[in-house]
Amino acid sequence: MTYTLTLQSIEPVTHDTHHLVFNKPSGYTYEPGQACEFALARKGWEDEQRPFTFTGLPTDPTLEFVIKSYPDHHGVTDQIADLQLTDQVEIGEAWGAIEDRGPGIFIAGGAGVTPFIAILKRRLQTHGSLGGSQLVFSNKTEQDIILRDTFTSMPGLTCHFLVTDDPESEFAHARIDKDYLKEIVAGTKGPIYICGPKPMVKDIQSALISLGIEDKRLVTEDLG
Ligand SMILES: Cc1cc2nc3c(=O)[nH]c(=O)nc-3n(C[C@H](O)[C@H](O)[C@H](O)COP(=O)(O)OP(=O)(O)OC[C@H]3O[C@@H](n4cnc5c(N)ncnc54)[C@H](O)[C@@H]3O)c2cc1C
Image (cartoon, rainbow, N blue to C red; front, side):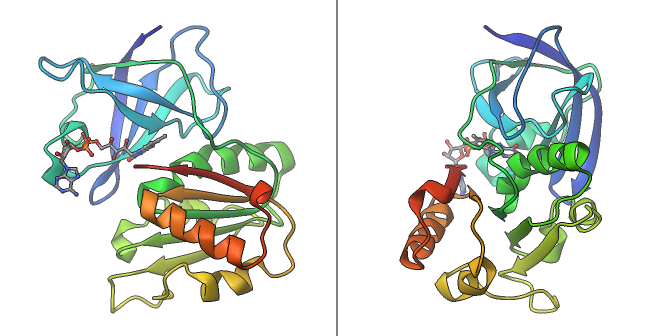
């Protein structure tokens, strides 16, 4: 089943990422962390489906996305930046591997943070605090950090920002490897969520397993 959505607002989040709000079709449901196949209802783009994650809450009257554009792909995300109000998109049913399994460690690279936006928002709404949860968020530069202020102002959430290509930044320049993760996971028992580019997710999974973390604690999805 597909649903037609109409764009209600589009705002920049970073230099290459936008927050988009659409109407929500009656009866449409999803769980925080889930995504859907999304195609532009523009001539020549109708068959180009790409997965994007819902960043609002299921109880909201609208559907929200945070989408990073890659102009060099000349693909769907390059078109996103030019969308106009009243432009339409078609989406399918919600799906995805990331689900809320309780307070834990949320590890993201770039747009991999998107499933955690809705999960953390809902945990905050339900419990009033994110005590016991940590966000480990790696980006190329500080300018690339999606919703930095939103995360840092979430009560109880410990944020660790890392940058891989920003010599001026005061954030850690470390990679999320075994050495880095050792301190982060020490003494923790809850789920460890990982979402980002495929090689990153694989490397972090292996590092955690080699630190003795049980596979059943890992909740992962890669962006391809
Ligand atoms: C479950 C899931 C949820 C996701 N949720 C989100 C989300 O909420 N927000 C978000 O921003 N992203 C999200 N993503 C990632 C998002 O789907 C991709 O960024 C998007 O599909 C890219 O589409 P595109 O058409 O712009 O480029 P692509 O489809 O990646 O590429 C189009 C063409 O460009 C070429 N190309 C590919 N890579 C490169 C490269 N590095 N350099 C040059 N050319 C290249 C290839 O020929 C390719 O055919 C999610 C991914 C998954 C799997």
